[in-house]
Each structure stands twice: as structure tokens, then as C-alpha cells.
Image (cartoon, rainbow, N blue to C red; front, side, top):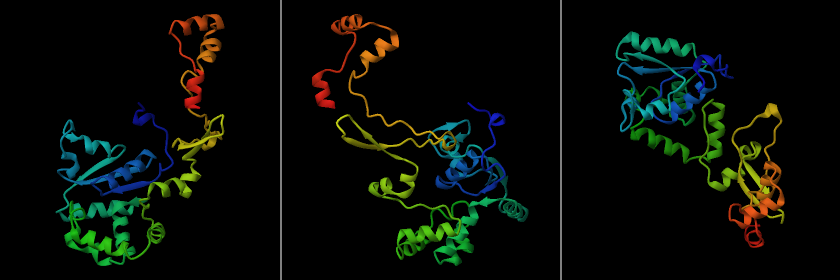
Length: 257
């Protein structure tokens, strides 16, 4: 495990993020920013946000759910009901490179509902998560244009966004292809198989992962035991006859090849 003081500086090391979110997508998104080196400041009420107390599993007094989406952050507890408690977050926002509340306000402008930004019913800890008004406004707006149009509009407004794709669209998207997330494997009979690629990429290494077709049962037994362990052919045959080693046979090759 890498201790915080031992971690190397990430690509977002000079970015401060003000996190005003509570439920999964928001905290998870800001957690990723923290993983990349940003200073993420989570602002919560004096008794904490709701997810800190969600059952059934806890680590000390904090729920496992809370712990799973809030690593690499700092916590500031404020009394939102006091004038000073409302003023301090506003000051912090001015020092940040990104803040999630700004994204909410930008979203209201993009969907043509600027009046929602200052609607008192949609403020506070839970106002934005349980209001039918929000769902109705979002559905009305999103149904009026194709998904690609909304993606373009939100990207221009610096709002993180992505379409929920079907499987075929996901596999054939430009991003999937660009990152090599679909690999093509080929066996000795020139039959191909498409599989998911490795999400971990190391561009600086100029490394292309191998694309070996999955091995047949016992395909490399002789090679590994013989060359790897120095066991001669005669000894290998004895181990095979004794049922200690298994090798690829004609039937297996025909079925699995």
C-alpha cells in the first residue's frame, strides 16, 4: 500500500476541487480527481453527509459506502444555516479550479431552465436528489434533441458527460477503438475472436500488449516441463503415462482448435 506521503505528484496536483456532492456519481467523480492529484475539499454539514450513515456495513462510525467513494479528499464541516457558514464555501469556490455546484448551475443553463439554479426547493442536502421537478425538467429537455447534441452542448459548458450506449455502440465507439479496448485474437486456422482489451495503458513505454489466442488444454506442457525444468522427453512420456502430466491430444486439438 502506498502511503499518502509517499505518493508521487499526479497530473492534477495544482488543481483544487470543491466537492459539494453526496451520492454516488458526484463523490466518485471527485474521488477520481483526487486519485489524479487534485486537492479535493469535501464540504459537508456539521453532522456529515447522509451517505456517511448508510447501513448495513461500517468501518468505525463511517459507512462502507461512504468510504468507497471518498478517498483522497479533505473534509470541511460547516453550519450552512449561519451566514458565515454560507459565506466560507463561496470564498473557497473562488480559489478552486473546479467545483461540482458550478456544473449543476451550468446544466440548468444548457437545458434552458435557468430558473432552477436559485429555486429554494432544490437547495440543501437532499433537495436535488428527490425532486420530481428536476426529473421532469431533465426528461423534457433531453427528449427534445438527440443524445449527441446534448453531449456536444455539455462538453462546451465544461460539464462531464457521456451517453449510455448499447453494447454494439460501445464496442464500436471512437474512444473504445482509440484506446484499443477491443482486441482481435487469431488462432492457427485463421479464425478470429474479439475480446476486451486491457484498460491500463503505458504510452511512454510504447508497449503493445501481446494478442495470443487462449491456449488449448495441455498445449504447452512439453515445452514448459521440458525446456523450463530440463526434463527430458523420456521422463515426460513416463509422467504422461502415469497420469501426472496432461498434453494436448488429437481429439482435444480438433475440438478446441
